[in-house]
Length: 306
Image 1 (cartoon, helix red, strand yellow):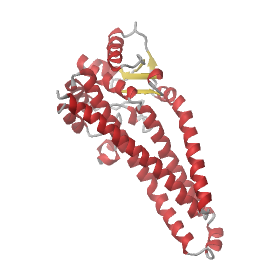
Image 2 (cartoon, one colour):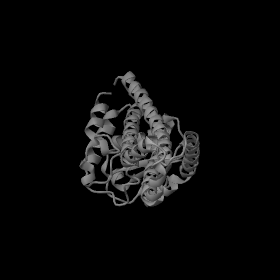
Image 3 (spheres, rainbow, N blue to C red):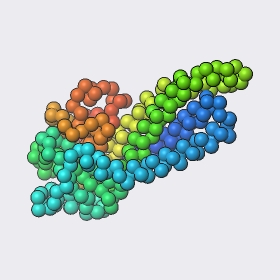
Image 4 (cartoon, rainbow, N blue to C red):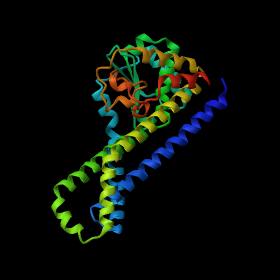
């Protein structure tokens, strides 16, 4: 295994994610400014609204960051287990945590025969990894080790922070677009009478605002999918570095993706957290642009090159 290749992939994925996150925040700020100008707010007032919206977004992200793990685990019907209940799994996670240099996370189990796993928590000191009974029973130890290393890498790389921010921003973009379109609908008469005297500038921003309102939710989701895919590639590379056995994770990904059983407790709001998309339906066949997970074949190919 060529260790420089692994390090380079980790560094490359980190930089790509930073760029995507910066681009997302910039896109959100531009969207607020355009909508404000389309509503005939002057330039200074529009900039003020941009600043206010970013502060509010930060507060919302902070609150959700502290409570999102409990919400996700509750929605997934996950139950915390003790070392006495599953000593082998605990020892595996314990050893990997030591190697990764992170505290041993809490371990949760979902009673479901569909093989899958995810990590959550606001930071390495307040983290949890969750496995289905299916993944524990169906994978060999080296494969389960690869999966556990992948999830611990998410924790070490603080991916839960990234994805919490992204999911909130996507929701806010959709909300802003909806509010803007509704304001146009209900305030149509007033805007007609006032815009006639305001010149072509107001008309330009109004048209631009409508275009943004239509396209922005799609653009926001594409950015979310791109960020999520980069985090998966990064966790795969980090796991290979941690276990020194990329083949174990590659075999695990192949087995999990080949399993046709859907995970009953998963939904569209939590699907992006799992190591493999747990929704085994038509949505899994859509173009890769609209998937929160990279193609499994591409992930396996990258692992085999390490």
